[in-house]
Structure formats: C-alpha cells, structure tokens
Amino acid sequence: MRPYVVAGNWKLNTDVKSAAELAMGIRDGMQGRHRDDAVRVVLCPPYPMLGVVRDAIAGTVIGLGAQNMYPEDSGAYTGEVSAPMLRSVGCTHVILGHSERRQYFNERDAFINKKAHQAFAHDLVPIVCVGETLEQREAGVTSSVIDIQVRQCLAGLTAEQVRRMIIAYEPVWAIGTGRTATPGQAQEVHAAIRALAAELYGDETADALVIQYGGSVKPDNAADLFMQEDVDGGLIGGASLKPDQFLAIIAAAAERSGS
Ligand code: PEP
Image (cartoon, rainbow, N blue to C red; front, side):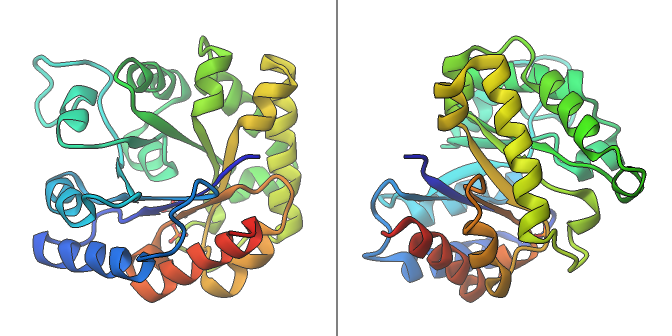
C-alpha cells in the first residue's frame, strides 16, 4: 500500500529561533504516534534553517526537505544550492517546480526535469509540483496542461525512480488563496496523473507513485481530500507554520491510513 506523505513547505518564513520552535512543536506533537510507514512527514524550511530543523528532528522519523535546488553539483552559480550540499546538511527530500518558482523565477518543465535527475543522482526524493492556473482551468485545458507537465518533468526517469518520487498536484489558483479544490476536482486530476504514470511506466509503478494534493489544505478539509482514492497526502503551505494545524492534518492522514 502507498504511504501518505504530509510535507510542510515553510516558504520564505521563519528565522533560526522560530524554525527551531516550530520543528520542536511538530516533533513533540508527533511523539509516540505515526512511527510507522503509513504516514510520513517531511519539513521543508528555508535553506538557512535546514541545520537547526535537522537538529530538532534528529532521531525521529520526520524527513528534512529543501524547497528548491540547482541542477549542478558545484561551480560558478552564485546564490545557488546543490544536491550534494542538501545531502550534506541532512536533506532527504527536495521540492522541485513549485508554482511560485515557475511564476516568479520562470522555471520551466525541462529545467525541473534536469533537477529531478540531479536529485536522484544524489539520493534525494524529489517532490515535483504540477498544476494549472485559474485561466487554464476556466479554459477547460487542465488535463492537457497536467499531462504535458508530468510527461516533461518525468522525461528520462526510470520506473524505479518514479516509484520513489512524489508528485504534488497543486492547482495554482488554490495555493495560499484559501480556495481549495473540491475533493472531486482533486481526485479527477490525481487519477489522471496515475493513469498517465501507468501508460508511461506500467501499473505497478503507477500504484506505487505517491501523489500529494496541495492548495489551501487545512484541518477542516484535509480528511475529505485524503479520503479520495488517489490522494496520498498533502503538500502544506500556510497550515504547516502552525503546529496545531499541521499536526491535525497529519492526524487526518493517519486516520485515513488506519494507523
Ligand atoms: C504550497 O506552498 O505548496 C501550498 C500548497 O500552500 P498553501 O497550503 O498555503 O496553499
């Protein structure tokens, strides 16, 4: 059975002190619970806070993720951060192609694909984000937009890699807006992504692929979203900055998984 993965994307928030407090709050709230494989939790703070969060979650099952990376090991790329650097600081995961990176930093699928290959080359689990804009949804082209994004972001990856990665479906119009996709809208796109994975890699790989939903997930809508057959957890922005809310979302995933 696929695990549920609940990841917190802290975006451009926290400092060393508040990041440590937030990570400790989540760690303490999870103590003695969810230590099985059915629900996995990953915290993705900004780069400068990775070390302090790593220390706060040391010895727990919580994973550490970065919010981005550059697809080269090293070199003259001022201001960038590499996969080996992320590994050396203790990262297990990395978010790639978040819609804010696509929107503000002009990231395109081919570049995100390069990063995904680089993540696997350094044993990082990529969380690859895809999603349509409001204009695209209203124009009725959601499925073709998602189809192209998934095909291009996964290009050249092996079935074994796809079984280990995570795809986050994040409708752009739902991120940070308080406007969530209905469970039915989420399920429809998740099922289409899984069907595409089956077409490209076979049923076994598609069945193993974790597909998170992201976009204004809160404690009061998490359970309904996680009830959907193809929704395997969430990529959580705003609510991941509040331990009680993030813990409630983790609890919703745990309840759904029966753990
Ligand atoms: C995100 O940052 O990926 C996200 C989904 O944000 P929010 O939960 O705030 O909509």
